[in-house]
Length: 245
Image (cartoon, rainbow, N blue to C red; front, top):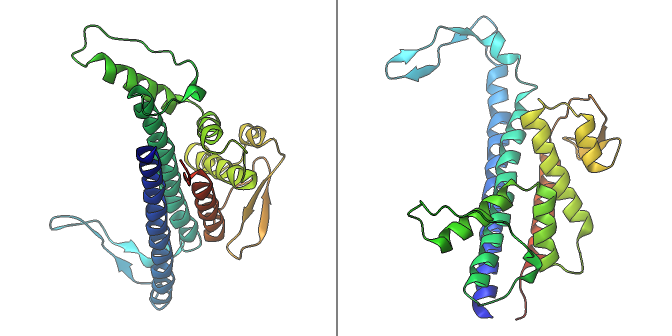
């Protein structure tokens, strides 16, 4: 049915557009950092700066030599910020696709028996109508599922042949990388390795070479790894796209 094809493909088109834009911002930030490094290197260690933090308000002078201490960490900080944005875009795409399935099923335009049973609690004291309550509760339940469950459900419907297994695994790995960065201060632990069913995580370094991180190692995220993540999302997006009704 045309509305299903158009709506689903529009979600994927939006994902690809946003991913491209975010990745270009990452490259711009990285380039500006590189140019700033040249300028920073020309400033003597005896200098200081007083950044503006409000209207007519500057903080106390900070020695430039202290700022220089962060020069090796900053490229990874940039990567982590934009990597987190890409993970957010991917998760939003999964949610948008799931909500499309729910809307089409409820309106009788297309049945999604693959969703099977969904437990829903209704609040009879709420002013929200039952239709929206049911839809919102199902959506909330989907959001609280583990990422692996959400990906499996969407992929089962849109990719029954399970093509792009390597790309799906790479996306899952990057979801876990985000969790390591945000919740474990970049330290690889046994929980993450168990999720990967591996004794180590393989990540591309800044030169594009594979680096292996084991338990208790501090993970460093690079632009080549993010590019690999971006490419995997593109490939799965194309696999999930509806080509024929």
